[in-house]
Length: 342
Image (cartoon, helix red, strand yellow):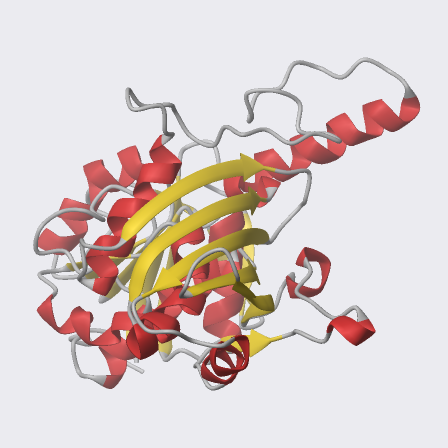
């Protein structure tokens, strides 16, 4: 049994972390909910008991075994070292440490063994990277990835609870025919709109979100030779990211072979029955743990090409679920030293 702390407990991912720990029956002896001064004092429920949210400080981690951090990159940069110094293991769900040498970047179904090399911090990848690699890693193992072209259709949930609320509010204004307030969480109003702008733009013309997917994929798969180009788009969907992925493999795979490989992959569910209009949908993937893959077909413009449509819940497999799965591996392999008493 472990003493667990959640940084960013009152956010959208924090809420799903609590639900996921409970649903998957993670061995929690005690739980500490941490947040900013704005949220301290609120109460949240966990396993039928009410817990008061505490103010996050550098002294919050005494006696804590495991920290699940999802309060933003700058907060993790400031407070995670204090947690490690106090003897806790941190699974960080921000971009703060993902590309640091010596910090494992882990998708359990893809490279779960990488947790063994941790030095107190394990990083959770970007949500879009996780969802993409759930589909691509099994194909890479079978036929080798040569090139990937991906366009994402990212939900408002990627901007947290405030992003989802802004989309709903602006949509109501559009439907009512009244002026909406200025967008705060997105570059433009997301209501009935698609915005090819996720995160800040870099000097190369790509956004930071797009380059995260490139660099993180190389690190997780351990293969910098894969050519990857990304366009990330925010769409007016509440939760669940969708991705259109075109891949070129070193070895030829038919659509049927790819379908069979994906059907046997852990955490993946193939939904691909065009005769019945069955393919992955954000509305059906919401609140589901699986990553859904469909529209599997050969790209006849190149020798070894495939197209996929991939959908996953950004707040679950893209964040909270992946984080808890990492914690489960740590617990199963004895990589957490339990200070807590059952």
